[in-house]
Figure (tube, rainbow, N blue to C red):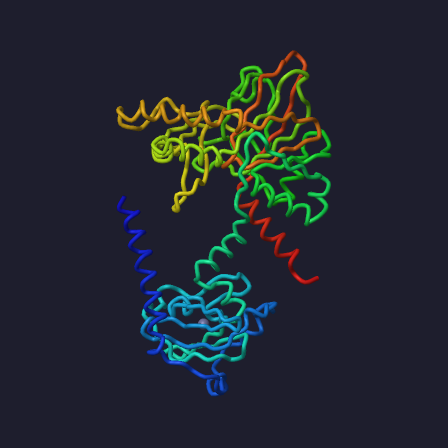
Amino acid sequence: MWSVLTKHIMKHKVHRSFASVLLSGRKNRSFPIRCPFLWRRRQHTVKAVQEPLACSPSAEIQHVDAMDTERFIRIFWKDGSQSLYPFVWLRDNCQCPGCFLHSAKARKFSVEDLNVNTGVKNVILSNTRQISVLWPDEHISEFDAEWLKRRCFSKESRAEIQEELFSPACRYWGSDLQIPVLSYEEVLRSDEGALKWITTLKKFGIVLLDGVPAAQGELITLGKRIGFMRLTFYGYTWQVQDKKDANNVAYTSEKLSLHTDYPALQYPPGVQFLHCLKQAEVGGESEVVDGFHVCNQLKELDPEAFHILSSVLVDFTDTGVDYCDFSLQSKHSIIELDDNGHVLRINFNNATRDSVFDVPVEQVQPFYAALKKFVSLMNDATNVFCYRMKPGHIVTFDNWRLLHGRRHYQSDERVSRHLEGSYLDWDVVLSRMRSLAQSLQAPK
Ligand SMILES: [Zn+2]
């Protein structure tokens, strides 16, 4: 409650101070363009190390001034818009070679050396695409228009850049999903194909790749297309088959109810690949559910159940021997929220939910009631998409968002169904997405 209140107050304050800034513009110093050469001598050779930036017409600057009272530099863009940049942020982000290591694209300047109340001695418009700031200690910083525009603090600009960095918003779906299908060959051979695969995976949470050779080991090739795979206690890849003395419920021919993989890890894998090598003659259909969509439904239908599942920490455990011996314990809420209250990840696997349950005794019954509501909703026929994998398919899906399961299949002495699986982290997958997007955008 307190954190919610504090957030609200902070928001209100920030809003008010921005409004007062805009109303008090008359107090501010304004520097017309004048000869920059008087102090240009002391500037660093920034140009020599900076990459050339393609400048869009909207990133041209009309005028710049320093608002000393509010400690903002204000930029008037040629397109009529304005941006505010706090002095302290500009000083912190000086791009000169003394303050920024361009070969590593990393800050050298330390907080120890930062005066959080710094003033600005002078700011000038070097040309329409660059400003120069002279600090009280005579240090000089130069900032390119395009660089500044990209970092504008307005709500709209921040939202735009965040979408670019973390990819497009989710498209929710139910049993009517048109499962996105892409060619494996195209994903491997073409950068456009690989980028389309990753952005679609992020947007819909699932992409089926077809035309894959039905031989073990292809997941290694696909993992290398991204970067590297996540090693777990089940190895880099693992074989989903009916096994004698199975060390995991997946390694039987039984029905697997809807779940996410590996909540027994404190950081569950973000993306899962399953490659169909052999399908059962009878049964073995796959089921998937858009967990984020179901969470939205639960929040609407039963806010109390949503609150319980997003706040009570559940113990998970996984013990056994595979890649090496393991004895895992973790704690997660079933519905994990980010700081903005949006669903970040579903952590639900009934097989590894521990019988050890670290909650006061009176919270146990309400927790089960809430979980039952959530599970009933995810099993609702309007939410479950069912499909049948064939040899030569790899299904790739978001393990933080989707719940997946499979129907019972008939198994006999021969190996009647065989999937190979592997995991990747979203960090690695999204890194590849950004690199592909950058290289495809770069002028050839
Ligand atoms: Zn510097």
